[in-house]
Image (cartoon, rainbow over all chains, first blue to last red; front, side, top):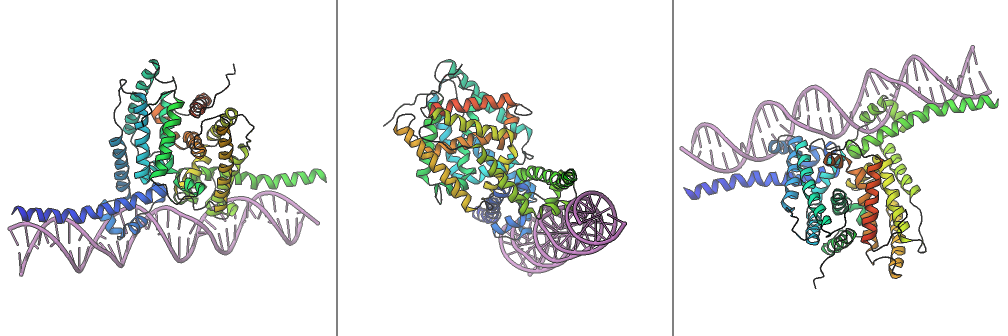
Length: 217
Length: 217
DNA sequence: CAGATTCTTGACCGATTGGTCAGGTTCGGT
DNA sequence: ACCGAACCTGACCAATCGGTCAAGAATCTG
């Protein structure tokens, strides 16, 4: 009985979940490249290796699919960005922030591009409440940065512009990967490239903010 | 006779040039938002206030229109980026570079977004020769930066990553304007905002590279 | 003024779009 | 074995897509 139920659930979840995962991956790639308006369900279906109506059977509509992916992107980002406190070490906090953002660009470039496309489209699918959350998050971080500056732990730079600097610098590796590869003559950005770029960003940005790092060798 | 000729030429150029300018402006806006695939000629026509077939009369095809805009974007960028020399002052060069890029983001945000969309699409319309030119440009700049580092005028940071940092940081204000406005509670980025952001980027990036700036008051 | 050129623009075309729908197949439970 | 649920998928629909074409109006030129 118990064994029978497990077998049943597993079989049901396997088909639906497997197909949904295929569709989500395919859709992310298409939306990341062409944005919402430029993506077609047929292109997504082709990328997923399923007929179009089968895709619609699972996801309902283009809009629902897109919203699911956007939500997933936000969750990926939130899961990697931890809270900070004024008692934390600025060097460690900023370095962790930069490195985790770079890791996201490396592991989920399509998510980054999908988000970039959403913003370029004028963010029609991002709820105002989500921007409110972002604002709250930026404000709380900015407040900590200001306290560090007050205590002489870093220069009194504008903390909001600093956050934008880190966002832009780190997302660039995912969003503009095509350009970077063409200009640097690479076929892909590997671990070593990401490590060196992350080191560079940590070094320049921290130094640029007057934050001294600890040499650990 | 001379007076009659002037009147004739002016009248002919006025209709065609005026309509082409209208179409280019409208198209830039639509392509900037939706990218090539997501932009429709009907949307461009509506934004230009002309019938679709009138638009096609002037520009021939969607592809030609897009390529024209892409070319125009490249020319705008090239017109503002001057050659540099190892004898130049690093602080002045980098500051000029950052400020001119920020000015471009401020005056031509749609161009920046159109380019961003082109890259997100995988750069299908950018000729390989154009990337070669970019690479040449980046390499020549990197060489100068390295010479500066050799002479102790700046830190030995990776010059290519430095250029990417400046690109990403400056283009961010155009490309992610929607996000910036939402988070900062602004309705637009004004001169003062751009000035402060430019100052911030100059200060942090130059300091981050170990370049000392001259205080001019 | 007449003819040539440019401009305007709706009708039309085949292809594609986001879906809807219906019917058949497969799977799971009784 | 039967029935219901889940899955699969081609046909179909109205709307939109990038263009073509033709006809009339406006403008230019000699």
